[in-house]
Amino acid sequence: MQIFCKGLGCTLLLLSGAAIGFKTGERLSLRVKMLTEMLSILQYLSTNLKYRQDTTCDALRNMTQHCAVQTLPFHLAPLTPQTLPYRLKTALDKLQTETKEVLKQQELSLFCTALAEFGSASAEEESKKLRGVQAELTEIHCKAKEDAMRDQKLYRALGIAGGVAAALLFV
Image 1 (cartoon, helix red, strand yellow):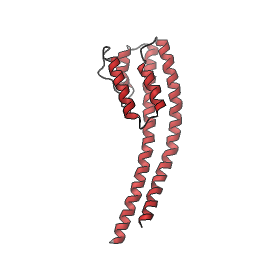
Image 2: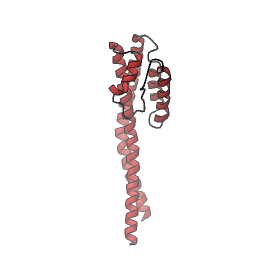
Image 3: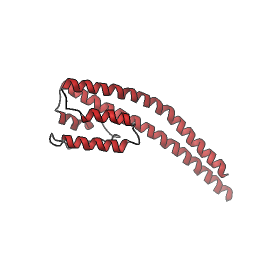
Image 4: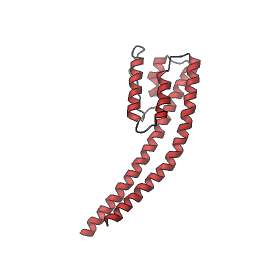
């Protein structure tokens, strides 16, 4: 009976370590998904500006639907021209608060600044600004993707190794 309990305890420690490693790896994957959605939003707004498809208010309202935003906590509906400044500020504040554990400050700052100022300049200036932010975020996204792939393996291995070490100490 004692051997069974020790075996069960060792198994639980091993699984706990592995779960911690996998959970940490998933957080890195979540950052990549959020950056992908941020780039999708910027691309949508840039294309919308280029072809002058919608008003600023309509473009912002429709972007979460067209961009299939799922992981990024950024939604603006319902939105009218009168409520645009307030809702946009509220949504950006919520985004910064809820993603500060996952996204880096530079990433949030770039994205939030681009959206906060959206519609305040001419279409040409706005398009240029969005392309600049897109370029920076694309570079960050590529690096984050590489880092996530490498670090996920590391965290998983460390989690399993930590579980094994804890199990050996238990025995």
